Amino acid sequence: NTLIKNISIAAHQQAAAATDITQTMGVIRQITGQTSQGAGQTADSLGQLNQLAADLRRSVADFKLPA
Image (cartoon, rainbow, N blue to C red; front, top):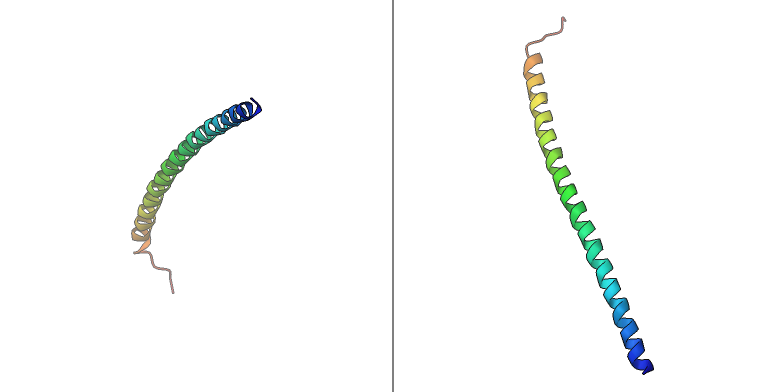
């Protein structure tokens, strides 16, 4: 009888732990998605910055400082 109770308690504890793990994995999945989205936005911003830098280089290419 005690053995059955112990097994039952352990099974409930394992089920609770599995539920916690499932919830934590869901949070990790959300964070991973947000990180991926942020990385994409960063890449887009870097592309725009690169284009602006190229435009600026072309804009000032003809400027000469007096000697």
